[in-house]
Length: 225
Image (cartoon, rainbow, N blue to C red; front, side):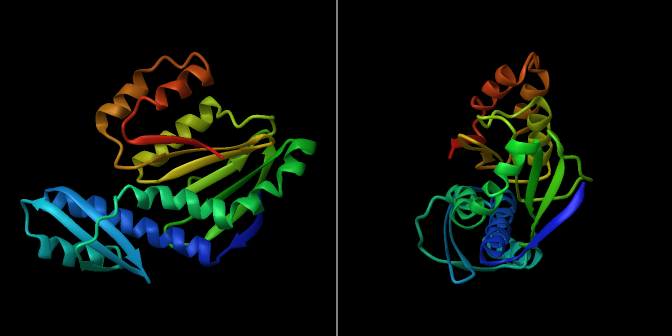
């Protein structure tokens, strides 16, 4: 593995901001014991509209906005909080995907895989891996994506296990870019303990059967690009 490129731009910073919004929402809902929450983001501020909260809203807002270093305001907004998760993938598509796919000719020609990650701090990196593999020390990332030396973006068993591990550490999305297109698996809420047990107990006969089980989980979404 050798370092290839450091990336920091409006797109990586937006992903970092959206991630802090997500962490706030997840922690706030649990701490304030809210039935639901509606959100909107504007100019670096997260506007929230909590619904039927049992706990003290102002205390939870003050504490977790400080923890996640984000400006949060109460407002009568009506946006679905799950859009925050989807917008992380959308931001990758809008501003970072072209860079990753520009490495596909090298992946298809030499079978070298490339790995991009965006950290919670809003900084990105692109690494050149080895032949048909990318091995790096574990790095906490919000979003990660790697190139695939086959025609279709089918995840391997190692890919799927890595994705599950990332989700347990509050990562959001992992993608695969191949010749025919891309694929992303991302979560839209905290992954549940029973879902982890379900995946752990799935008999991993092959990547296809294991991958098909991911679509059964309420907390996950799969999208083809």
